[in-house]
Length: 306
Image (cartoon, rainbow, N blue to C red; front, top):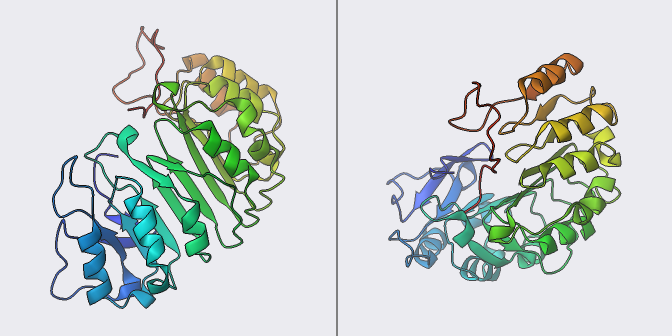
């Protein structure tokens, strides 16, 4: 969260403008091409010059991965969609590689145009807020991630209404109502049912102030039976939510259960590892917290908000 991406989906990120490409840039399909403003700072949000450089110096017909460092909506969404014909092989897109801004400031506008402009997109990751004003359908999308300190309920509901038959990996950082994260467990119901997500193998519902309620809903959610990994990390999970998980449907089929940044008692942590001996359970504490006589602390907090 505090550093620019050096790698995206297994490819090195070439940062255009921030660090001009070398005299011998990589082959077009061997890099994730990063589009950044020439100057950093809260007024320096337009990376149009970097896009122009890429179009003029690289065979973009062979580019498969893009990383966007634009943060002021709707420039990135509009300009990239307008240039879709120049990127016929684009398969992966990361929006919001902007560590020097508060995550709550990063707003990409409506991201639905990306699905229309790039119908072969397999991976879309969004840092900040990317609105989804209408459900979309994509048979190619396999990874969808929203990293947000406040994900609007409208986005969660739209994701639940999308037709994504081949989606394998879904992450939703719900965030806090203080920054627009107003989703409820009811909004998650279509996702947890799994009816529209027959191929889902990883689900993350994370960074939430209602993590116990989420855990209680997940404990009986039909989608869980087909998952290989589940993440309820980065939120305010307490013994209440963990108790619901252990009392609900079996989780022994999971390869990994990610609960890091939690507020569980030592006794509950021991129960989880004892009752799920063959599952990789991530029980790392919140950053800078330690197990001492003050654990768990009185005030619970999510990992990412503002």
